[in-house]
Image 1 (tube, rainbow, N blue to C red):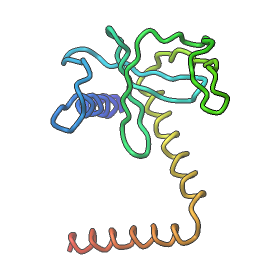
Image 2: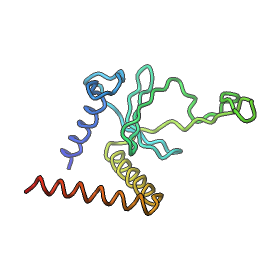
Image 3: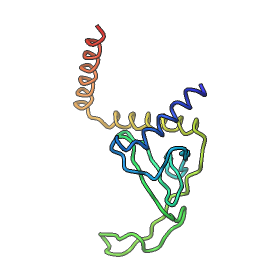
Image 4: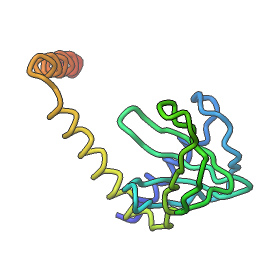
Amino acid sequence: MKKLLNTIRRKLVEKLIRPDDGYTYTGFSEGEPLKFYYQEDTGKYLIGKRSDNWYYFEIQLSGWHSYASRYLPWGKTVEKCVFNCVTKEMDARTYNQEPKEINFQDWLYGIVKNVHTCYKEAILAMDIDDFIEAQEHIRAWEERKNGQNM
């Protein structure tokens, strides 16, 4: 089991730092370990590295989303920092709590749980026509797959 988890961790890191895959340079270099985080107030599981900036990635159904932040006022409310188009005034913004570092196994479990929840919500939000169309795509994929195995 430990070998499997180490392999998954290595593959994730390789995927995130490969410039030939269309990802922008993140400031990471080989040998610098990425760490795993959980942000309690948002329920997000993140992977990242603190350097001059804090670079982090969030996995969503559409793939990896990358962010960079610098000197965020974690957990604080900053007055008059966001322009409200309706009232034409500056509103306050409360920043999320700082993510806590967690171990890889807890991070992986959380990611799988979050992705499962997102798929479940997406399926429940589908109307019947979208659901039938999705089933047809799955059937067509399975037929192509079975045709290749023969």
